[in-house]
Length: 301
Ligand SMILES: Cc1cc2nc3c(=O)[nH]c(=O)nc-3n(C[C@H](O)[C@H](O)[C@H](O)COP(=O)(O)OP(=O)(O)OC[C@H]3O[C@@H](n4cnc5c(N)ncnc54)[C@H](O)[C@@H]3O)c2cc1C
Image: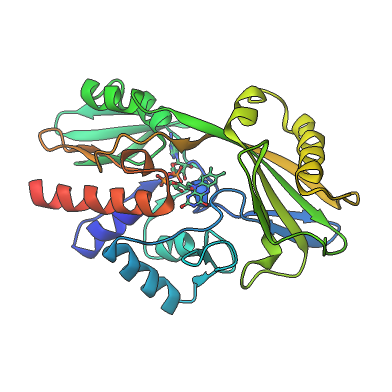
C-alpha cells in the first residue's frame, strides 16, 4: 500500500490484490466475537517506531488522522495503530482500489502486459507493470516463472515463524506488567487492552520465541493453546484464571532475515518486488521498501 499510494498520488492507476479479508497482513488486528461481545487482538506487529524522516512525516500524518498514537510503556519511541494495529492500513486502503480475499496463484507475461490468475481463474484485466509485495517465501513462488534473478534473491531470504496466543480473561490480571519480553519460550507478551484507545476487555497477546515456534510449527492451533497458556503463566510466575477465550495463530513467515537491497526492479520487464524482507523486518522497513520501489518505478520508467 505504501508503494501503491505513492504511485497513485503521482497519477498512476493502481490496483491491489490481497488474499486477506481486509487490510493488515502481518500488522493485522483480529476480531473474535463470543457471547455477544467482541474481543480484539493485535496478533502480528505489536508496535512500530520511526527513524527515517519520510516515515516520521507519514507517522505525523497518521497521528493527525487519529489512526496512530504513542505507546511509550514498553519503548519511548513506540507507536501503535488506534483503535487497532491495522488502523493506519485501513486509512491508506480507503483511497486505494483493493480486491481482498483474492489470492494470486499465477502471473503470466503476455506480450508487454501481465495477466494474473486467482484460485477462481484468470482475471479479465491486464497490467503494464507489476509489484509483488508478499513475504519472501511467497514471492519465490510467484516470481519463479517470471524472473530467475528475483526469485533467487527471494529464495536467499528465510523467515522465522511465530506461534501467537490470543486470550481474554473475565477480570484484569492486575498483578502482571503491561508487557513482558525474554529470550525464552515466551518472547513477548502484552496486555492488548493497555494500548491506547482499546476497549476494556482484558485481552493478552503472547508470542512464542523462534526456537519454540519452529519446534512446534506443524502442530494444530488447538494443541498450541494449552501449551502457551502454561508457558505464559510460568514465564510471568502467575496463576492464571481460566480464560474466557483462547486461540492461537501460526505466523509461518513472521520475521525475515533481510536481503538488505531496499527493493527489486527490472525496468525492461516492468516487474518489481518490495516488502520488509528487502529492508529489515519491521513495519517501517516494509513501508520504506514500498516507497523505494515506487520511486524507482517512476524514475526508471
Ligand atoms: C508476530 C509478529 C510480530 C511482529 N512484531 C513487530 C513489531 O513489534 N514491530 C514491527 O515493526 N514489526 C513487527 N513485525 C513485522 C511486521 O509486521 C512486518 O515487517 C510488516 O508488517 C511486513 O509488511 P509487508 O507489507 O512487507 O508484508 P505483509 O504484512 O506480510 O503483507 C503481505 C500481504 O500479502 C498478502 N499476500 C501474500 N501472498 C499473497 C498472494 N499470493 N496473493 C494475494 N495476496 C497475498 C498477504 O495477505 C498480506 O496482506 C511482526 C510480525 C509478526 C508476524
